[in-house]
Image (cartoon, rainbow, N blue to C red; front, side):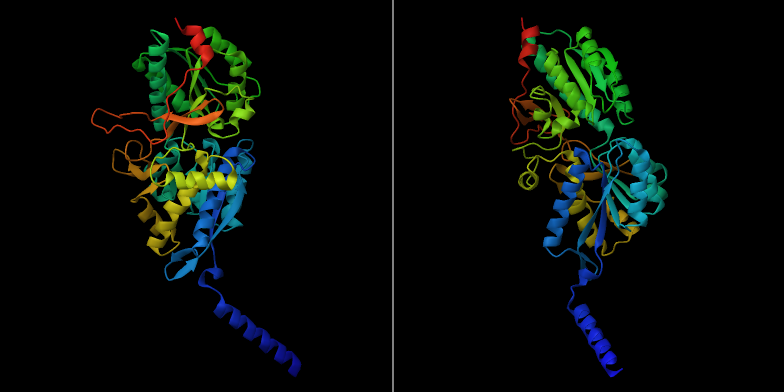
Length: 438
């Protein structure tokens, strides 16, 4: 009996010593759920960016939350949202019920993110979207602030601004082709994957092309995961298009570029092709993706500000490739959530929302600021333009992904001229030159 009491006493003393000796953050970690299609490059970017952010924060001891320091713990959640809406909603439900996450970052396909957003809002959990572009994700915030105020867009800026940037790229390339090839009026074919986020982009493009002095020759909508695009490409070639305006976020971007290169379709490719943003695109297209241009966030050697190279070079060193835009989970955590949590001194979602929605802060791709609508209501949507976020226009040239825009770009007559360090001239594909050069 005495021996048993002695053992119990020793154990109690040991536990007390351990408790006293343990750092304050060991009692509880800040749990951040990273949700995305983890079997695809987009989800891989989500996880890699978040991993870098958590490691940097934890290396300095964690975050001050009031008077205690807490480390970051990441929870990896595979939404499988390309293939299953049910998987996406299940993953989100598990994040907040089983894993008890404090915050969420990620999401990619709008159809899935809209549903995942509702689940996060049910539990009043802050969710920073790092992939989906549809405006509705943020107009919900303005329409029903009490319910949706816990959602913020982290990347990219919404699809209306995405298409605006694409129009700038389109006008830029069209102007170069007119000048170099002597084409009097540029003909454009729209090719966008079948997805909700593409709908507003297609609609606006159809209306806006005449304002650019360009002619629409047709619209094609292949499956987002199509493995054969020869029918669309043959139709595009018959249409006489000089430029193909692409709107791709999924694997069809590889299929389309590879087969277009094989067929030597005499048209420049401009727009959005998320697959073309990654280092493996050139090999995936067997070299046929050369001269494809896409909107992007990062490129080797290009500096939007003093934070860019540090992030890009660290990411390349760690993961062996340039970060895609979904890797901006890094920015969402290290520049968005982390300082806001420390300023709030709490993990209380309402207090964090009140601070975050009014902050403006630098990230590796520019400056984050959140918009209000024309009625002055919070949208939690990203500001676009000089002084905020602009993105890049990148092109594959001789097997290398280089940035070609902004190059002496002015958003308006009054706006400053912008050229980021590391920008190079755009190149027209040789077979396009051969077809149209007089």
